Amino acid sequence: MDHNPKWAIFVINLQRAPHRWRAVSQRLNALGLQYQRIDAVDGRQLSQQQLQQLIDHERARKDYHSPLSASEVGCYLSHLKAWQAIIDHDLDFAIVLEDDVVFSDNFAIVPPCIASIAEPWDVIKLAAPHKQQRTQVLGEFSSFRWVSYRKPPLGACAQAVSKQGATKMLAQRRQVFRPVDVDLQWQDELGLRIRGLTPYTVDHSHTHESDIFRIAGRHETLNRPFQRLKNKIKLQLDSMRARRNTHPQSR
Image (cartoon, rainbow, N blue to C red; front, side):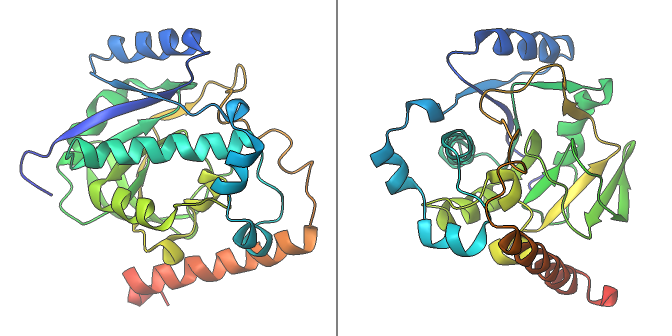
């Protein structure tokens, strides 16, 4: 990465959720960080015709176990907007946040820490709000451990995305068929080099559910349990291939 990389912090926020924007703005202001708002795509406003065009139904049937909700489609489109903004602003990377997150004080040093990383990367996980995943420590930066994953953690509330990573995702996801947080686990399929900075500095607030990133009911509305099991096995194989490609000694 360049000696003085260009970066930004993007916060995805629905127009009908100004209270969330105020809350996250106050937290980032307190940390002395500059940031920009990404106007989220409201899944509730998408028509059935739009949803038909936006979803790759054949891939969804084959590679996911439950129909995508309008909120999940809106969520993915919101991330696509953030990734496109990285390209449009010619940034080296951006930190992409949900509007319903909390920060540790160490989050203030995350951007310069990322800027100092010389190893190529596409996505850096800054949070793991759900199940923790096993990691391999690759190095240390400032007060953080630089890690790779056996399988990247679920959740899309906070990650850094490089220009290269944004370009890869935008080229491959003209239509969507999985929720964005699930899709970002498929390293080999998408050709992504996913890393993490631990201990994590961002988490969901867990006080109320985000309007655009709602996953409640995802497991309760499971329609095809056999397909879900099949996809879990395929994801494990995908993760093994990714580790083999980036760390041949870990075979």
